[in-house]
Length: 146
Image (tube, rainbow, N blue to C red; front, side, top):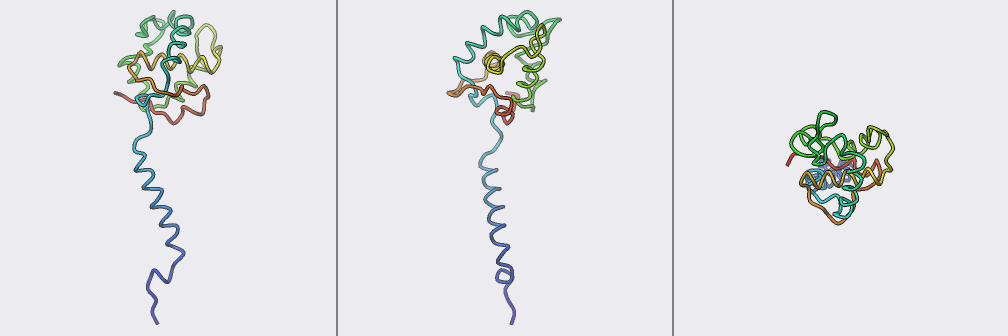
């Protein structure tokens, strides 16, 4: 008596269904979220503007275009430098090394607020939820070219 392949290995059906479901979920999710998905609030960016003026503008200019001391924090050069990296990378970099006069001197919430302001100046839309003030949360958000 010969058995059909499906009946001979019923244990294969469940794993194949799980793999198929996972593949469908990944495909449905599409590209990872980016700064263009409203990842900060307007109020957060407003707080970040004040913090930027005090902590960042002396080295990066008031318009975020940079100067001989510090690079641009918005615009084409900035976007090209951070394209494909995550907002988490930017958060960790900023949190650890900025401001130049006091590296690591910003609270995580201050860093998130400044990043929100940078995103706003760079043209990213505001959303309904604030950019998280934790190193691990924004790591999944890609910074991408527009």
